[in-house]
Image 1 (spheres, rainbow, N blue to C red):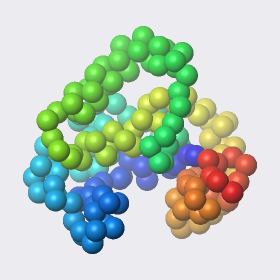
Image 2: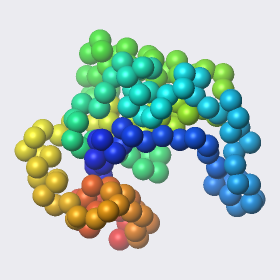
Image 3: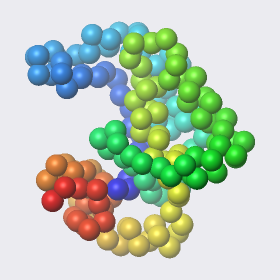
Image 4: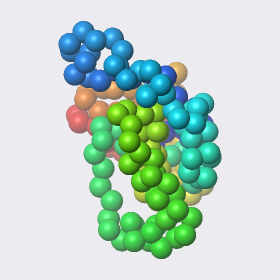
Length: 164
């Protein structure tokens, strides 16, 4: 699915509760103190991209997203990106952030929301217009329905990664 880039860029996280902890009745992450907070005080995802990665989503209108932590990418795309000096540097900075010795960090959540945007091919203007034309007009840009996430294509079964 695709998500509005401005909405995605404004994503922020102040505390985190793991699903397993919710089931145990724990309301806040035990790491919601300074170990969870961003070391550099990032205000939102776009701020993290600019300050930590010197990178922005390639399409400022729609960005491909991957919910559920599962995605696939052809090796040829990884090779192509790794041959680009700017993308290679971005991957290096992401790796450094992920290997920092923290138990749970905001950076991990920001990087989780960055993978599809950096690994997928960006839409051109014609494709953005096509996707936007199929978008159902709702207040919520993301909705869980039938076990899937609809994103910008909310209501378009054949073009989403939902289970129906």
